[in-house]
Length: 292
Ligand code: SAM
Image 1: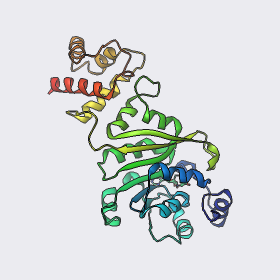
Image 2: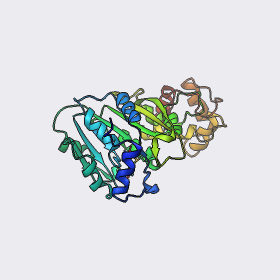
Image 3: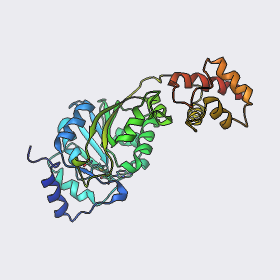
Image 4: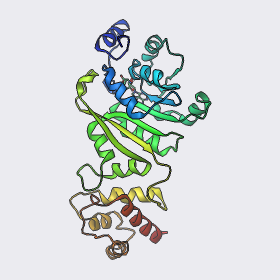
């Protein structure tokens, strides 16, 4: 596949032709290895019967492979300098639309309605700009979008935290936030060498399959996520202490003790690190009912 954009030679040619210089502030690290792109597409389980949203197409390395594998691709790129380049590199593909917009400000539902006028499943696939990985993913998850899955290349440590299970050091409020909406899996660890320029950190492909129903029924999501955060506030302290501190104006220490006992959770457990999402759900529902 000599014509692929994602080779060191072709990428350099394109960058030189347009005198393009990387903006570090936009997280611009382009993929120069077509095997990695095919791996991402395999993990995302893409077929011609699907539509794709891409975030940050760069010079089109991944976009090209998506265009080959999927029905339609809509890609959001914030950097206007890349638009003429993409027009050139993706010239041969008539199923790609580039939108010059900040993904954090985009109305994704409206865009889907406009460009995907069929009932094919929609998937998000991207090599994300690392400086805003978490805001982008949390926004996608919370927006209640009609998407089946999200498959992204992100910083390895962040991917591991998002997919972490209880009783591991990576487990925290981010794990709960992501796993409340999705089934999360780290698919592939990716070396720095597949990028130009090389980032300082290692990367991983993270696959998030959207859940149809939440794994735990919570009465109030904001309260639930606040309680989860509070539980992890000081990882060395007990769960009881973290909760007492956080809720000190709402509940007396004794009420916290009683609540923990009521839902059958030992308050001397360390922070939130051993609590399952179900246990967090029971705790949150118990205390939420008490403040109402
Ligand atoms: N997809 C290309 C690849 O894999 O070679 C480029 C990936 S690069 C890691 C991230 C891309 O996201 C850059 O092209 C950057 O300009 C773009 N970007 C950064 N912030 C963005 C934002 N808020 N909205 C949309 N695109 C953004």
